Amino acid sequence: MALREILTVPNPVLKQVSTPVAAVDDDLRLLMDDMLETMYAAPGIGLAAIQVGVPKQVIVMDLARQDEPPQPRYFVNPEILWASEETAPYEEGCLSVPEVYDEVDRPARVKLRYLDYHGQEVVEDAEGLFAVCIQHEMDHLKGVLFIDHLSRLKRERAVARVRKLARTG
Ligand code: ZN
Image (cartoon, rainbow, N blue to C red; front, side):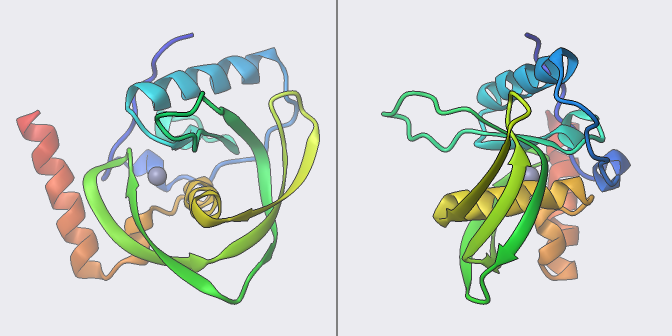
């Protein structure tokens, strides 16, 4: 496994739309292993492949608390089958927009379908942090960042902050 570089705003690659994966094979599992290691090292709770520059519909996630054993999860070609009308606010952050946190409203519950690490199809309901995280990560696959849900002023301020952070290291 190897650590990959996480791209940050305003890198235009983050705006790319990711394409579906044709087959869950060993090459893809290698990518998912690298993504998981990169996410843990960051540290973060979710990472989309485009954040390491790979425009494929792949997401890794681990929502285990610090006192729990790791619970790595893998989502290939995820689709939202249903979303609740009810929305819930959550203060989100993103490894591609470091040190910026703001509240985003999203459907409180979703039903999703995806392929797992072994290529098996899974249909699953998500709520709470899982619902927030999977919708945030699936936005990445469409080239959408959580700051795109904020006002233009807040978005510009966030990008300026990350630029400054990158300059000063
Ligand atoms: Zn993100």
